[in-house]
Amino acid sequence: MPLSGVMNFRQMGGLKGQNGRRIRPGLFWRSAGLDQPHLQDIDQIKSLNLKTIVDLRGDRERAAFPTHPSLTQLCDVIWSPPEAENSQAEALMLLSKSSDDVTLIGAIASLYTRIADQHAAHVRMVFDAIASDRVPILVHCAAGKDRTGVVVAIVLEALGVDRRDIMSSYLETNDHLDWDRLSIAATAGTGVKESGLDLTTPPALALLKRAHPQFLEAAFSNIETSYGSIDIYLEQKAGVSSATIKRVRENLLE
Image (cartoon, rainbow, N blue to C red; front, side, top):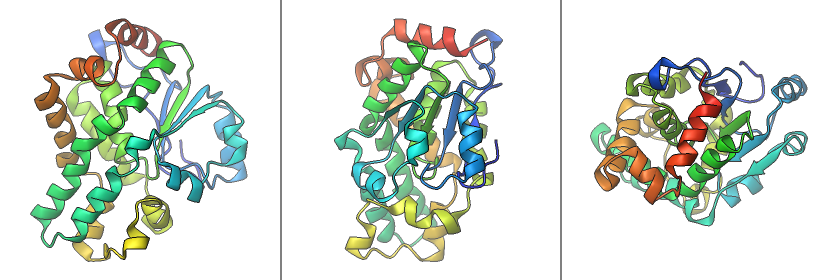
């Protein structure tokens, strides 16, 4: 769904999940920040009849780039727990010290290995909202790439979507971002400006601006190494019961 003021706005409807059942169209959305929607964007988003918006950004990010008030009035808005604040800052610190592609990729991958744990409360909120039929639901962060990418991937995995399709959906982000507009918002609240970090070197910029298979693979690998499976992570870390997962499948799958 192309919007002029909101990037990476798209739905997960149509992806094939458990037993060949597809995700119902119009119920599960993802995007970048919602701070600068144009008037026509607001009308289009209102037409979706959203019931829940999950904002994965931290307090400083939301303060610097608050969600447009016309959208916060539409539905329930859920935002970041304090423990999620520093995950992006830590990865950016690592990036600033990296000098080659291998090290840079490892630095970003290290961010992805933390997202599932640091945003476990958000994961539970998303599952609870869907299980309670508070859909359509929109999940977003600053770029809709890293944090949103992992949280959405966890939901898709629980729905039984093939890992290859999850990866393809994640990589679609590369077709939907304008980094000339996003560069400030994407580092707001991370401490980059205050610390004077230099992330302007071409290798760092090139990797920061794109979704790469290695990044999402790192997130899945860490979950499976730490917990054994996505289902165990959901139960033990995120506090999502098997009954909740079942209701999520019933509400999202055709």
